Amino acid sequence: MAADLDKLKPELKTKALKLVEACSVGGVDIRPNTGLRDPFEQGRLWRQSRSIEEITQRISFLEKQQAPFLAHCIESVGSQNGKNVTDAVPGLSWHQWGEALDFFWLVQGEAVWSTQKLINGKNGYQELAAQALKIGLDAGGYWKKLKDWPHIQLTHESSPLARMSYPEIDKAMQAIFS
Image 1: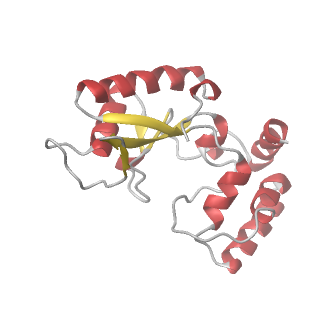
Image 2 (image 1 turned 90 degrees about the vertical axis):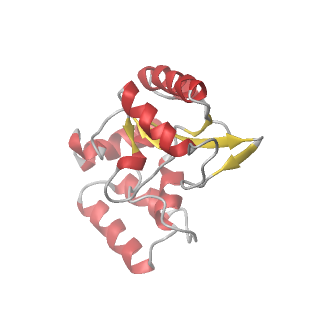
Image 3 (image 1 turned 180 degrees about the horizontal axis):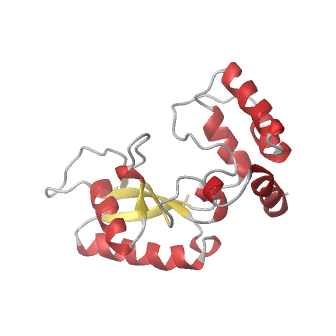
């Protein structure tokens, strides 16, 4: 599924197009994959690697923080399975705000997800991250905790909590996605 760049913040769309071009000039074909993500999908992704105890604890925490909609986004998606791909609960990923975009590396018509594979001496995700920084974007491949090589975002702030409170985030997510 290709990302709908028109659903991103205009500044990110502009920079994303420059990023695709810069990578192409460098011999790497990257394609936008996931842009705007609703909080229910974020809840699925967050939940897929968590125990029921962690899930219950986080739902309770969000409710105590006056964020019942965010709690509902986690609770309502049900059981999920998979590897850990995000530490961000619904509303706390820049994807929900149109300020983040994930890519995939295209090689001979196939998506390549390896961060180690080299083609002509380059890895597509390392090139993506390097070019993203040059354009003024934050690159998930350079994060210290959970490296996310396909991910770029407008801000270096790790979470919308740097700008808003839980109740403000909850209200905004409910207004946008209900």
